[in-house]
Each structure stands twice: as structure tokens, then as C-alpha cells.
Length: 185
Image (cartoon, rainbow, N blue to C red; front, side, top):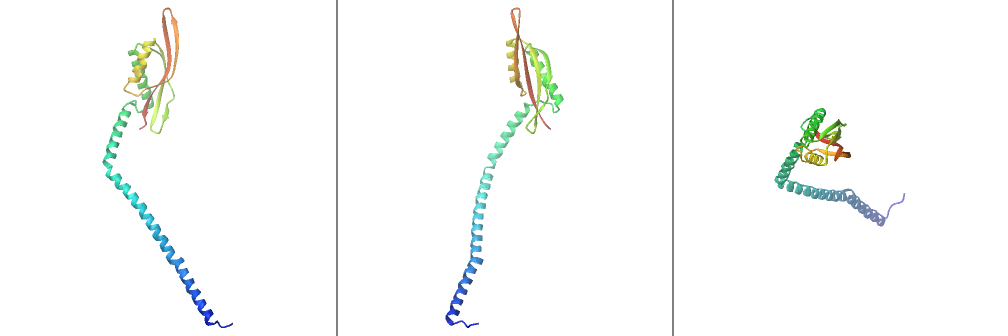
């Protein structure tokens, strides 16, 4: 092996020093700088989130009043559901309402047939009753108005109308599905 000259030794020492500086820069300084940048951005995100929380807390009264107003509206809508909690009792209640309104308007219910109930959303069931009626046009108009103005929410679907002429009078035979809703307990 050959001995290194002073010049080579100085060059190696200088290169070694530069290598150590570069190694220190990549191993210590850059990770520290990246961590500092990450902490700064994380603190900025937390500051924004905290300001949103403060804003929500300041508006808590508004949110509470809106929530209580929505609860009142929801309670009002729930009062328009049929009172029964059981499907068979709700069907009976719906039939009683329909027959009562028909009798009040002078309409004859010739046939009523409960249809299969259906779930509406997660909490509600639709109870449907298919009815055949015999009436004249003014009685039918009064009956449909009474259904729409009833305190319970009643929905008329699949409305069909047949007419019969007898002597000097036209009798109509409407067929329709009347539905009401109950809430699952």
C-alpha cells in the first residue's frame, strides 16, 4: 500500500467533512424541519377546527330553538298518523274512518278489502284499504274532500270511476285505495 500525500490527506479530510455535513443535514436537520412543518400544519388544522367548535357553541341557542321547532313540527305530523300501533287495529280504524265519512256524505260502501301493508322507510307502515262505492258526483266530491280534510293523513290512490245510467239519474261506482300510516314502536 502506498502512503497518501499531504494533499490527498487534505482532500480526503475535506470530503469527509463535507460528507459528515451532508449526512447531518439529511439525517438530522431535514427530518427536524419536516416534523416542524408537519406540526405547524397540524396546529393550523386544529386551530380551524377549534374555531368551528367555538362558533357552534356560540350558536348553540339557535340550534336548540331550531331543534325544538323541528320537534314540534314532527310531533304535529305524528299526530296525523293512525292511532293504532298494530296493523290489524290500524286497518280496522282506517275502515271505520272511511265508512263514517262515506255515511256522512250519503255514499254506500259496496265492498272494502284490506291490501297488504307496506313498510315506508324504517319507522312507518302504510295501511291500505281498497273500497268500492256507489254514489253520485256531488256525494263523491264531498267524500273526497272529507278524506283530504280529515285529522289523520289519508291518501287516495288508484282512483277508478265507472258510471251507470238508470232512468233519469247517473250513478257512479268509484273504486279507490285509501291509505293511512302507522309508526312502528
